[in-house]
Picture 1 (tube, helix red, strand yellow):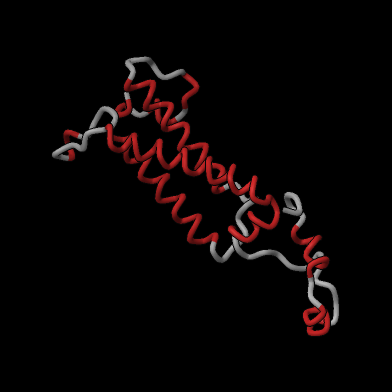
Picture 2: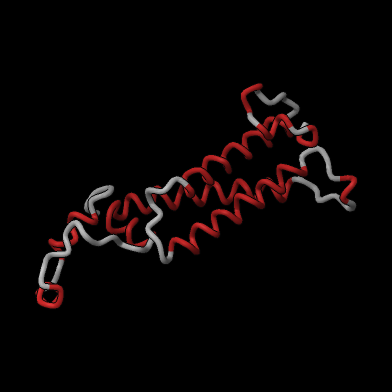
Length: 151
């Protein structure tokens, strides 16, 4: 890759003679990738792609494991205990899918959405581990700890 944030500034070096003739100028500094996978590969290279994929894969697997381990309530009035964490995991998984769908057409690598979802997925997993292990959640755990159903 050409380095984080450098696609825009390095694209002119890879511009063909046909493109130079068509546009009549260098595209350097004036164009963005408009695709998350293209931007990721062009800027961070193979090693960056592997790191991002590992982060996403780990978050995805942890959230799916959490969903499998929390029993689904038979009735809505029985939904208590750890059930809200499973709902939060559903929301984060849906958000990650939404980021990828939008990322096909937009450059999202440096927007915070994907990174916040990864962090939120990790936090949900840690709260689940603390609750399922019989430990108390630290007081700085945020809104998840404050809801009575999550206790």
